[in-house]
Image (tube, rainbow, N blue to C red; front, top):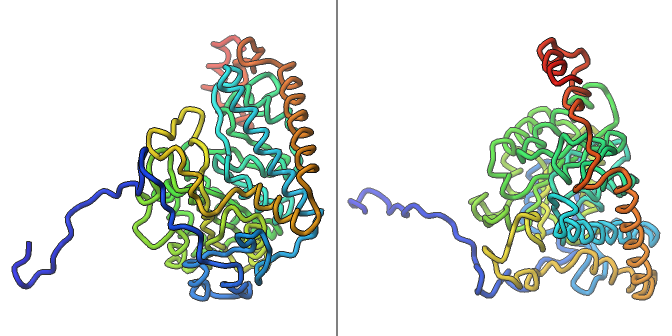
Length: 412
């Protein structure tokens, strides 16, 4: 309603998902952004100089799986094959674990289907002692750093060899030796924690950076802004990633930001901001290496939107067919990260379909053997489980009197 002096005011609205079950998904067709569109700026650049990178899309592999452009990291074939093997390992491991959950052998599980390149490519671009503050879909970082698969499965089962002693939900991994910090169920807290650890590293003079991820939905929470604000003010060596995989459980990404995209939000905080194809292994590696170089030079934080698609459900408790078209993944223009890297390797003569099938079988055999070995320490149905006394241990250096009193009441 207007009186001649007032502008028309739009009515209050709640954003809706662009397509629902029964609709045809439309992501706009093939991407118009090409690998050579965006330059690789000097690491000393100001945030304003990355405005094109925040509003565009950094790619290295084109739709024909050919690498080009300034962002091409020019990795050799051995490094690319290792990346492919690690991504295949994560996918096959996930497939086996979700099947075990469905048959009652695990209580809960979360897959990284379609997002395997993210943690693997980005962790490969880091130093081995850089701190990792993951969200749910970065377990692949542990594979990069060589964590034993049996140990990971023992945690998921919650048996006597669970290194967290039953204190966390399945897939909420923590691994001190790999600088891999426990996943947080109240999602978002890892942003502030990662910035704090990066500030401590800088204060101590350590050459350590910190990397963290959260999802598009979580970026609507205060923790996101707290982390960005502290990173902007104190300029610690931290890499902040928002993984825009289109869905936050059952709510579409358009409920999390009213701006052009997620990457552009970093510019307001004065932080160099990049938007990268999250299904392009080479692009992910390259932008993370660039951010790590900035951190090493004492130039502060880098903020990245990882543009990808969650091909599976949010977790084993989720049924995505309720809120999105069943064939939605078929219309995602970013393709499959594993297939894209495989086809690139085949294209340069470093891989073949035969080698790929052999590797897949070898990995599957390893996963099954690891599960059987993990079950020798206890299974979900029969135990043995970590003893109740573990709730009193590994928390306090000096046990407070009231905790000791509770322990004595338990008889432990």
